[in-house]
Length: 266
Image (cartoon, rainbow, N blue to C red; front, side, top):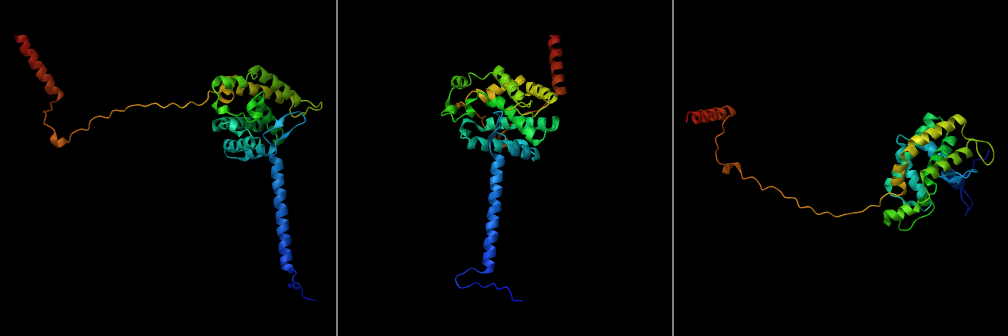
């Protein structure tokens, strides 16, 4: 049996070099497949029902694993907004409110309804749809939005009301609770009732709060106020103090009694 040589012909790579190159190509291929898979899982897509999945199944799955889902959703929402070119429409406080909104909805979907990741993703995007519906902040970057006064901001949301949001919720829920195409039957009748009750308690009963927090809140206004603070004069050292006789309360009472006695004798 002839030995396997590691020497290559002049100008040609050795067997070790060929093996190293092959392993490097394999490593790159695996990394690329992982990258594409991650991009696919994070990709925002639209269901046949027209529901836009801004919150992906990957985000729901990962969020449920986190010890602090709110922090995870904050980063995820910022990433989604940045990829859609609308991040400048929002301040960090807006994103924290949304992160808290998603966290509460995730607990309801996974713990209360015991939904799998796929159905939980649909439900959480239905909830988000109530906020994005007739909301120009999600359509495109609005130049100068943060500098608008309160009236200009309110004018942008002229068509967004509690009634329009509720009608949209009913429409979207119907599209995901029957099997007539293009509808998708993601929820049963009993689940639909629980979902509507939850929406009423968590969103519609607090609609004014959501409105002024996320839709037409007062823009930031910085005011400079000057105040003069007067400090007391420093106390002189004790060494410069004068002795003052300190009398007890009992002694003072005796003196008062003696004065009164003398006054009555007059």
